[in-house]
Structure formats: structure tokens, C-alpha cells
Amino acid sequence: MIAFDLTGKVAVVTGAGGGIGGDITKKLAEVGAAVAASDINKENVDQVVVEINKSGGKAKSYQLDISDEAAVYAHFDTVANDFGTIDILVAAAGVSGEGPNFYETPTEVARKIYDVNLFGTGFCIKAALKYMIPKKSGKIVTISSIAGRIGMPSVANYSISKAAIIAMTQSVARAHAKDNININAICPGYLYTPMWQKGVEKFSKILGKTPEETWKMLALDNIAMGRAQEVEDISYATLFLVSDFSKNITGQALNVCGGSRFN
Ligand SMILES: NC(=O)c1ccc[n+]([C@@H]2O[C@H](COP(=O)([O-])OP(=O)(O)OC[C@H]3O[C@@H](n4cnc5c(N)ncnc54)[C@H](O)[C@@H]3O)[C@@H](O)[C@H]2O)c1
Image 1 (tube, rainbow, N blue to C red):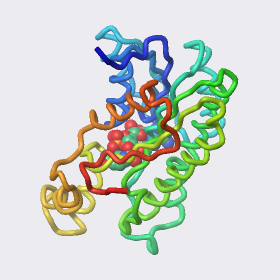
Image 2 (tube, rainbow, N blue to C red):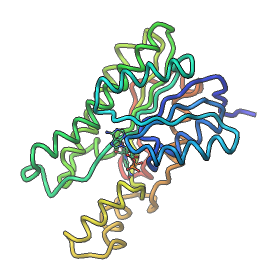
Image 3 (cartoon, rainbow, N blue to C red):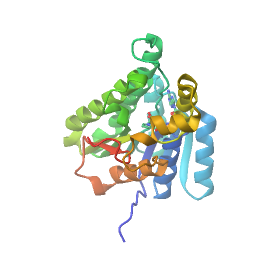
């Protein structure tokens, strides 16, 4: 039988207290990886880790703000010390929630988005490369968004940051292919995680619609398959991209979006 098996691998997951990062952490542990799970919100990531360890998996929780460069480098050193090495990075931490449009978004709001989504993701990639380059082996998955595929006026800076993650993924892929490091981006479509719940609350007030109407208008109506994505859709794509089944795939951005975008 063909199955994912990451026994003996050490994975770092950021944003592991969130909807997508939490499920990725659980699925990585389920297929045998030891997972260093971090989030700025320690309470949330603790819950994920307790669940994993109760069901026989191996995981440890850490508090980490990925926008703090020194803290990121120190975190990866701690993980390498705790687990012996680092084989996999899944950079799932991210923030959204701006609006109403590019022109009216205060610079400090935009900067916060770039600090986390762009610089934070970059710091994590650099910190992981420190351990992957010497051993000529590594798998990195970044979490972009379909918002990074096209401009989105209501979340313009988020959209820009997610497009930048694709360019970062491609640049690192080309630079480190010869080090046998695969790095790919996943572009999730529409998932009703805490990130979207907050957005729907905000936009339903602006639009004068119910949360259900707002979610349908902003999300479901844009999806060819007519259904929202689930966290496990992103996790299964991640398992593929960190496994050896995808050893010749690098620098790609994979839409997991029910057909809301085709490029
Ligand atoms: N939900 C969607 O529809 C959707 C669509 C496309 C892309 N994404 C992306 O998927 C990723 C996960 O989002 P989600 O939907 O699970 O949202 P979420 O809000 O449930 O999870 C995001 C997690 O990141 C953590 N985080 C925020 N700032 C951080 C920081 N500075 N340092 C460390 N952790 C931090 C949060 O505490 C949270 O646990 C994000 O990068 C998001 O942009 C989500």
C-alpha cells in the first residue's frame, strides 16, 4: 500500500494554534513526524499538542512571534537542540484583516501585515535553511493564498504579502535546488477558519448583510465546485509536498481552492 510515512522526520510548524496550521500539525504527527509546533498564541498551540501526545504522536509546543527575527533564529536553534535536527518547515502563521481598501489603509496596519506574512515567513525560511543546507536535504511549504494570485482590493496588503510569498518561494527554490531542498507554496482558497470568521463579521457590518449572506457572496459564489475548502484539504496537499512523492516538485504554487482560480 502506498502511504505517507514521515517516521524519523522533524517538522517545524508555525501558526500551529490556528485552523490550518493546527490541522497540518496533527496530520504530520499522525504520519510519524515529530512536530515542533509554535504560535504567537501559546494557549491554542498547547491544545493541539496535548491532543497529539494523548493519541500517541510526538509534538512539543512553543510560543513564537514570527515577526521577531532574533526570536525566530533562537527558536529554530532550540528546536534543533530539542529534536536533534530540522527536516521540514511548514510556515502557516499569517494575519489578514485590513480594509476598506489600499488607499485608506494606514501604513502601520499594512506594515504589520508585511512584518508577519512576508518578513516573518522569510525569517523562518532562513532559520530552517541553516539546518537544511549542510545536510543537503529539506522540505519547506509556505502558505500563500489565492489572494496572492490576483489583486484583492478589500485586503490589498494581505494580497500583496501573499503574492510576495510566491515570489519568495520561487527565489529560494531556484537558489537551493542544488542543496536538494524542495520549497513549494500552497494557495488555499476559502476556509471558514478563525481568520475568515473575523473577516465575515467585519464585512457583514460594512455590507449590511447577514454573516451567511456575506460568506456566500465573498467566498462560496467564487468557487467553481461550490463548496468551501476544509483544513484537511490543505493538510493533505502539505503531506504530499513534504514527502518524497514530490521529490521533483519545487518552486510551485499549488491552488487548493475548489477551482476558484485556475492559475
Ligand atoms: N482561512 C482561509 O480561507 C485562508 C485562505 C488562504 C490562505 N490562508 C492562510 O493560511 C494560513 C493560516 O490561516 P488560518 O485560516 O488557519 O487562520 P488562523 O487565524 O486560524 O491561523 C493563523 C495562526 O497564525 C498565528 N499567528 C498570527 N500572527 C502570528 C505571529 N506574528 N507569529 C506566530 N503566529 C502568528 C495566529 O495566532 C493563528 O493561530 C495564513 O497564512 C493565512 O493567510 C487562509
